[in-house]
Amino acid sequence: MTARPVVLVGLMGAGKTTVAGRVAAALGRPVRDSDEDLARRYGQTAAAYARRHGTGALHAAEARQLGEALADRPPPVIAAAASVVEDPACRAALAGAFVVWLDAPPDVLAARAATGAHRPVRGCDPVALLADQRARRARWFAEVADLTIDVTDTPPARVADLIVAAVGRDAAKR
Image 1 (cartoon, helix red, strand yellow):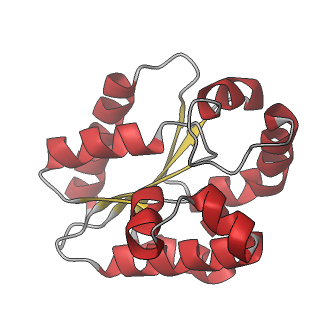
Image 2: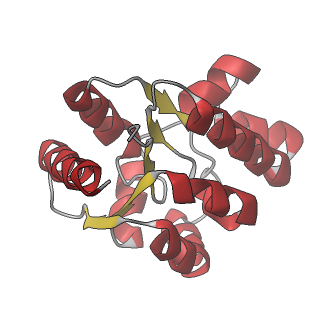
């Protein structure tokens, strides 16, 4: 059977970009990153895109990017925007992928997200924002995830190793 795309989901600050690069290198696959794809296509960060066009337009662009990345061959490792799990069509499309939810408490994620200027958290309480997003999205992350990893105290290299091993087990079952 053909390998499935590997998709990392989770809130901002979970380490999707860092871990996706490590997993892609280990599996010998290309990597797709929602933030990088958005910047390349529109010439601006997710934060700038949201300020200019609105959050709804940003989420629609992120959903389109996920669909395009899922169709890539060979199947990539994808660092997906957290918003995609809110879209029923995206959740349905993720059924054909191996999905990993990188999870951590909002305070941990907020501390990590504070270092990224590309993220739309300026001008708000990032812990409250992430707590709200987690409350709204957790059920969908859980619904689509084949594997959930608590990344609170787990280094990216270990997270990547866990994912590579799980992808290997998944491929052996298919």
